[in-house]
Amino acid sequence: MIQETEYISRRNLVAKELEKNSVAVILSAKQQTRSNDTQYPYRQNSNFYYLSGFKEENSALVIIKKNKKTKSYLFVQKKDASLELWTGKRLGELKAKELFCLDDVFIIDTFDSKIKEWLKECKNLYFDFSMQDERIERLREMGSKLYEHKNIAHIIGALRLIKSEAEIMLIKKALSITKEAHHKAMKSARNLEYEFELQAEIEYIFKKNGAYSDAYTSIVACGNSANTLHYISNNKPLVNGELILIDAGCEYDYYASDITRTIPMNGKFTDAQAELYEMILDVEVKIISMVKAGVYRSYLQEQSEELLCKGLIKLGILKGSLKKLLKNKVYKKYYPHGIGHWMGLDVHDEAPYKNKKGKEIELMSGMVLTIEPAIYIDKDDNAVPKKFRGIGIRIEDDILVREKGCENLSSSIYKTIKDIENI
Image 1 (cartoon, rainbow, N blue to C red):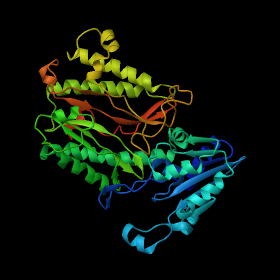
Image 2 (image 1 turned 180 degrees about the vertical axis):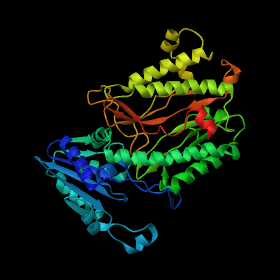
Image 3 (image 1 turned 180 degrees about the horizontal axis):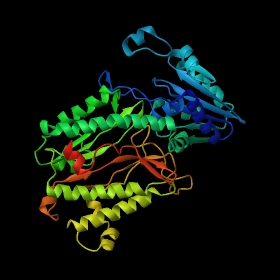
Image 4 (image 1 turned 30 degrees about the horizontal axis):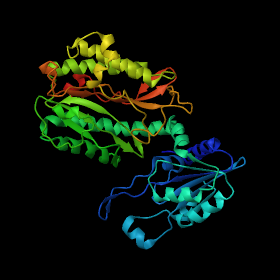
């Protein structure tokens, strides 16, 4: 659990990056309509949660920097017994003042009037440019005469790159649940008939262990379905003799896990499946061994491309010189995506890959990223030996960068052929 002192520290770090005489506004997420008068389960805006720890909708955080002094204010919904009967209890102004260490807490109904007053004394307005929200348009109007509008998301995203020990513990907790779910899937697959049944086994484990939401929509792709990278239909039969690509991770107290394993439906890899799988696993292990502070993600990408290309040549899937194949990016047909991405409050964490000068950010201790080499070969690809057609394999782990190396946070989730077949 994140302590209140950590939220205070985060707000102070944001304030340091603000220009003098500035108002920064971070809004909560809006409730999303599912259909007609039903809603999706509410999930707070990650940037808002990162700075406040407050989970209710229709709220706002304001940080004001005047001269060298900063103040932080939270706006919340007022207590309303008739509405709470339908949508659940609200914390309210008085309770929020008790629980959250801010300079003051106000009712959200007063937001516009207070912002107008604060903007009279300031020159700069910060807010999240990417939010599609009528409240953002009102902010633009209220701050239309200010010297400058700036994107607060860039400042918060840069802070989110480095995880605290408390954040790492929450990611590890999410991964401990995800481990149980993937191992359950490995045990259950041969006794089930459809992809959605396997998805249900996985997500039952998530919720049973207090991870009430998935970090993303689970992918359970049997056979050629694995060659659709974002396959989420999960409605086809589980076919004996085929591989199942399972990309599934839970979210625990807002922190994500992101794991992919590729397993044989019947518990036994064929020779061709094993050949391709071992090649990809070898690449993943080598790339993970390269992760440490000071390394660039682009270097890991280049190395993964070269290693996978060599493997494809050795297996007879690609033909020609390594140099030419790499130069012409022929391997992209089978490995079209990146080696990994930042992970944290979002499964694809909203954090920058380049600094203010447009240069790539090197890996630093405390960053968490995925490493996920893969090969996808469509069933109708006649350029490939027949035994490999229709196979899609991705192996993905969550890696914590350290000064002199890294920690594979998901290393205990089975991925060797021996371990997968044994379970």
